[in-house]
Image (cartoon, rainbow, N blue to C red; front, side, top):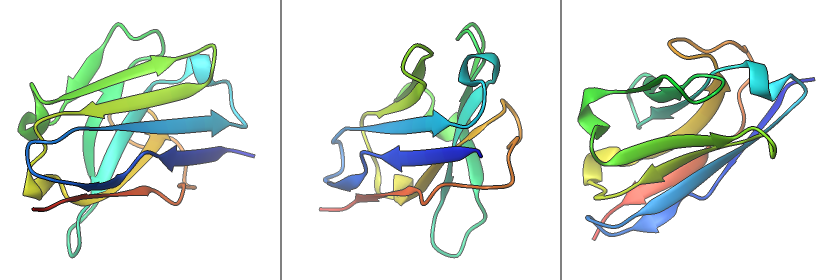
Length: 118
C-alpha cells in the first residue's frame, strides 16, 4: 500500500526558509521519480518540482526557480524540498507523489501547510 507522508511546513515570514520532507513507503522508492505539488486555496494543484529516480534530471516550475531545491535520499526513502526566499504566493498545502511530470499514484498524503505571512 502506497503511503506518502509530508512534513516540515509551518508559518514563516516573507524571505524565510522551510525544508519539507516526504516519507514514502509501499513502493520501490529508488526506481521512481518524485515530485512536489502545491495547492493554494481556490486553485488547482500544481506541479512545483520533480526529480528523477537517481537525481540526474530535475525540473522546477518557473515561479520557484532559483529559490527552491528538490533532493532525495534513496537510502532513507525520503524526498525533500528546500524553500528559500519564500513569498506570500508560495502559501499552499504541499504534497509529494511519484512521477516526474504527472502524479503516478491516485492516493495522496495529507500534505503539509506552508503559510508565508508577516
